[in-house]
Length: 318
Image (cartoon, rainbow, N blue to C red; front, side, top):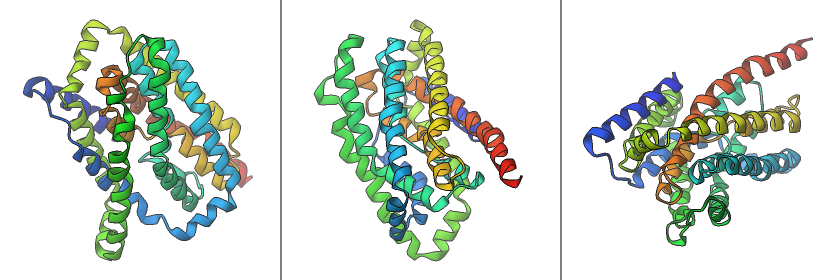
């Protein structure tokens, strides 16, 4: 259902932009994403759970290693092979944004440690500033390879403050206030899946309806090979993500299961929001790997839960 809504939102957004001149970008979409997608997940983040970080510091270090060192190198290698600045940048952005809106669903379903999962979710949100810095460094050091310019005046570092405030600070403050109003918190918690799906549809529709997103039609008309290159790059990236995650994490541990899900799933919607800041810098082809990541990641997560953790559960029963 979620994949259908995402594809529908993208198609309707592109169609609207094509016939109605498209939307102008506003940072309010970041605030909308922060309140509807991120804020509800923070209800379960308790300051007392911070002790879990020290208790399971080895798992934290594993997650840092794979999410902020190994996967960026994998994305960099695949990105260089694509020979396209935008596709490489989109893939790199995915590699530095861990977790996602569905990550807690998969953590609960696989019997992983949900308390630890929420701590990882919050920690990864705090690392958004690091992710933006890494994308900025990517632009600086790879632009010459792709024969592109990366102007300091329009790079991602300029948007870091706004993103951090709208996607981390404001949602956290709002979550603390909402928690004081029990009926409101219970309503949001009960309807969270519907709120999440609805907000993702609105965000995807809006972002693909932007005037800048209409350049995707030019890619289709003049460089259609980039579509196939992006699909191949995304599939290769997720294969590498799964293999590395399977090798590094011990799935017998509930905490490592939670960390596993925070690695095999990437925060695609957040990547889509952030990428709109930098289309003028990296090119509209940056949207391609992020768009195709939805098509790859959702079925991948379903099959991992169905086959990998089904086997784990059977072995535990035996």
